[in-house]
Length: 456
Image 1 (tube, rainbow, N blue to C red):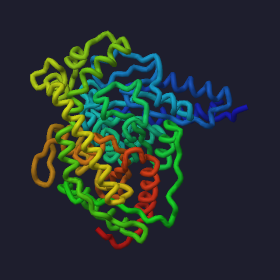
Image 2: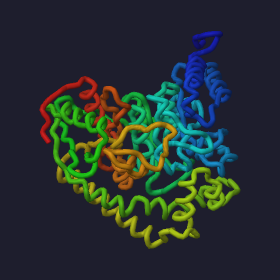
Image 3: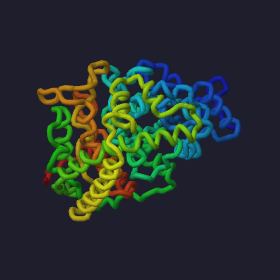
Image 4: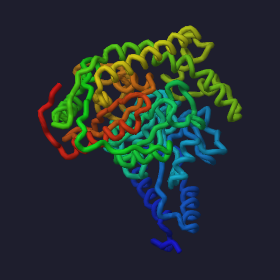
């Protein structure tokens, strides 16, 4: 007989009740589009009746990842009536590992943005400071995790949509290697660049989520193994906001220990590859992928209708003008073929960099700025005394590795007196478990504050 809690509730019901209570307490964050109070409670009761309640934990799922019986809006009015009949495989894997889905989280419309300022469902507040935006596009999941509503969450990432909100909310996030996680049951943006990705408040939980989805585990690094860490010479560590620069420089110093060697690496060419390939992949792949998605799930609307109903003017304008074949700025098949070729060359350049330098990971700040006030103009922000465009500024450090399909992990940096700052680790393609082990070592060094002399 399962032990009973408050008012006769079992352990799974207690877990869900506590999560719902916390969700009510932070409702001002606007983290959820759908909070499945009845469904989560009923699922918990079933597990308690069958003796499995003690293993249950709560999961938040971004509203472009299918959960059976719950609306999947992708943050846009044109999909508001769509209710999938089946879980996405990534959700099914986490349910099998004990997850109870608490609800579907708010996001930047159609996952095409970095602030989660959603005109239809409201802007998402930051889990570390509700006066700031949560980042995006998986902002609702990050806020739900950071504020303690759920144990873990699922987002999606095309060019930084897991890493950016993880960094800005002070939690951990993983963008897995391209193809590592199943993409079925996910509203598409770019089939080449899209992937689901987990978030959590601890690295141990993040690594567990990856193992739940993939069935793969990895051994920890030997304690005497010296890490070789790539220190970018170009772009990724330049033009940082003051609190980000301070946190980054402190991390460089802390990680300069006897078991860590900094290796300077050239990265400017990677940014140039991304500029030639990244957005062309998104704009060239969107319409065909979205057509297949709508038809496959019998949603009954065309891609043009969904885009035309978009509430965010920037999203509607970009997709309508440049991602639909009828749009005046549509790049066309030749541009897409060129972007695919550039991506292959970019992947080869990354592989060569890792092979030649022998680094375990390339490190840099995840985002060059901290989160900004929640309702301020989102098209631009101030950085080092000048106005810069918000979207390219926030994705600057996350997009290149995402375009190349490499894994990246975001780890919160220790900060004092500023909003959260994230540290991004990028590893070789397919090296996800090794990268998580490297992240665990680095996280332990940062949390213990071990100091040493940096050797850049």
